[in-house]
Image 1 (spheres, rainbow, N blue to C red):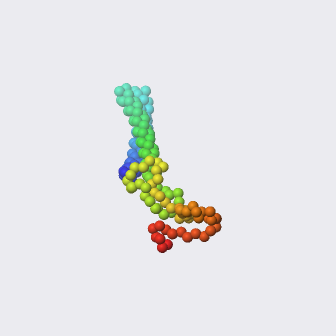
Image 2 (cartoon, one colour):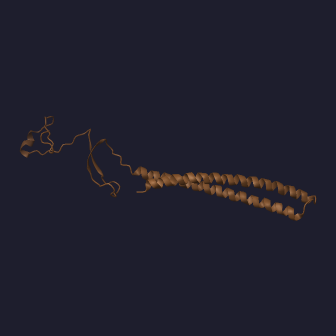
Image 3 (cartoon, rainbow, N blue to C red):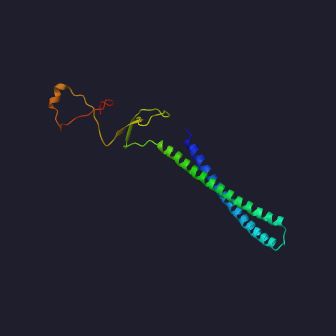
Length: 170
């Protein structure tokens, strides 16, 4: 009943998650940039410490900053990977909903005329249940009743007149 709504929702979720992936990529790029800067500062302060131009505490603070920046890079990479997995899952969900919608289409095996509706619209049907009765217009089936006493004279190729029960004059 709600497949069209679910399809639209899935499409919107995919669009949203594409933006989340973009944002996660931007955060990763920013974290890598900060890590590169913190790594350079750590190296610089380590060299300054060896020359006794800065205090040990300040050099250790820069080392801690570099370690924290490294952790932020790993966290940003994990967030990006999670966002990518979510996006892939949402695309799979969308394919599933689209497949369900495609399965709801009734496709006739022949081009013909519908003569009877076997099931009312909105009814639940089991797979394989006849829903419509269709006449293939390229063939003609005739049901005849022949009296036994005249059946011996019937042979292939004899002319016949066919009258419709619903229209006796035709």
